Figure 1 (cartoon, rainbow, N blue to C red):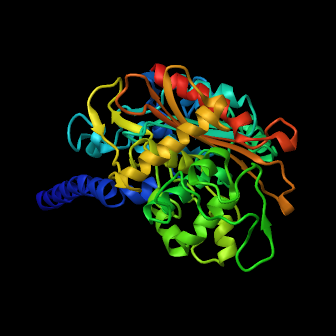
Figure 2 (figure 1 turned 180 degrees about the horizontal axis):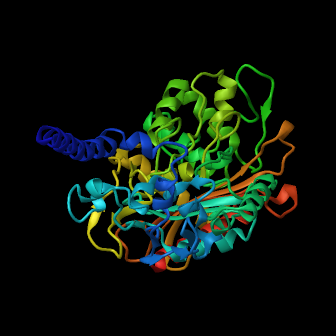
Length: 486
């Protein structure tokens, strides 16, 4: 009998010892697999069991959380949702995350181990620390000025600080309220279907996810290439452009909207946007020279992030001379995001040095405490010679002070700009896009304070009167004024 009791006791001890071993196996070996199992809702429930971290603009939160008292307890809320939607994106219990909500999801949701007060504590407890705060670079006054300037018209605005690359404004219009997508259920699905069915595509982030023919704003890139290559040595001297200018290898005459473009100087051509002069200079720089120049500005770069991925702007790498001429004035297959063209203006304003743009300044623990992450920022690169930048700066200032960009002028500030009217559609039958790129430096300021790119898709004007100076420049002016005041 005693022997049987002893055996039973040993067996029970083995069972007791097996319990923690099995628990450890489940937790440490199979834990990840079980967490990811489709039937396991614990990770989803845990994700929404605590309020999500905040996204801040100008030091104030533009997001929050609402306690629903349901199984997925906390839903995302947005302050001025349509205004900041291109920055924040959405965090939906049904459709996932986009923009900053996506790129900083680990920190906002509390999944990042760096948020923990004690190392490895939350790994052992399988809990989550409170979600962190994401501090953006957005300047609320500039963001509002851009949003109001577009006034619901299809288009986008990007404003950068040239000396740092900080994104001061990122607006896409028309916009949407991301808070309507936060939860679950029939109402959320209905909103999703309605937004995706709209012809205006309000959930498309036109500032970084849509490319447009840049039209005459691209002439700044071509002018930089011509000056750096030595094709132009005196911006005030005649360029030798024949009038009329016939596209190489064709019988097609390239028209000019302005007068006096035949054999005009580069200064005159930029001031009055002569197609013929810049197309001719592009062919003289050559395909290889133009490819190198546009690459320095960021065209054809699939790796650009702010930290959300940016659609690459395009400049064809293999084309005939006539197509090179058209591409050099922002036509043919040349396309650019508004962010890309803001980078062009910023490079000119910053003496030829381009600072990669970034939207997230830092990530902290909840309430603005300890900094847990400083997002990686790319190194500055020189895209043109300092003298080239100084000359282009002068020419862009002339556009505003004595040329087609007069609506962008600001009292008490030096403003440079370039207008653009980009044709598109079959046989250029579509309503042209109105472009304006610019920079501004306040009186007494050592550095330019802001560079802006504006594109308006559906400019409300008679087709023949549409221009970047008339439709887009006033929007840029309001954004620059707001940025300089701050």
